[in-house]
Length: 302
Image (tube, one colour):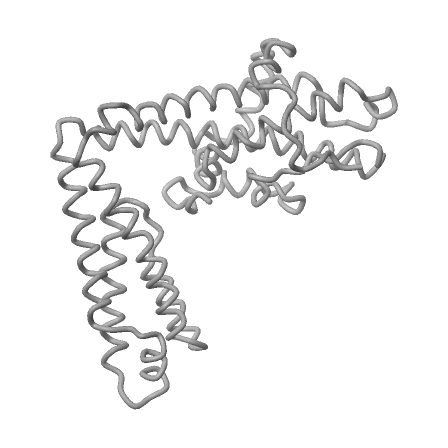
């Protein structure tokens, strides 16, 4: 049987922590010793904290209920899982929740919400993100089956999520749009017409890039601006906690998966929000991928 994938948790993390008690520090140290801090950070950088919290809260609640109701035979099949492991997972999930709530509180403080520079920067940034996605789709459509050209379009999109990276990608995509518009009398120029690509659209990309840069500069000049080093440290801490939580959550999910294969009466604990990283095929590679990936090269969160 499977636990209903979307079934809500029956316990909060706080309630689970109360039931399970504080984990043995030696167990936590043993988990943290598996990979380097940089490895955990690189792993955690691949996903948003909200997704990790959604699955840890739900799955740990179901794991607690399943263990409490398990027969001696079912518990014998659940090798790889223990209440002690669950206690470590709940403890780290709570640590992530506290850190995430603290970061969210700073970002949504009354001071930030009333700062016109920050509001303007967010509006320009969000619009620029939408334009970048639209331009990517348009350019890929025009590139059609030319794989080299399609890969070139992808390279122009870039992977950075800061204001300068976004503005730079818009500038580069505007330049490619100009090149496409210069074509005449060939299949590519026909696809340009079908896509209704115009010089006005190119100017919109250029203007969006300029607005992102200027509004970001206004925020940096604001006395309310937090230094990037502070933001990076806070994000690195969240990424580290995300990585640790993914590792422990993966151990729990895969312990139940293996036990279910032996005894179908034991439920699977299917990940939803973290499914991309905790699918069955990634069992042996999840943390290795993160550990082998320098933090600066970590994929964007999804």
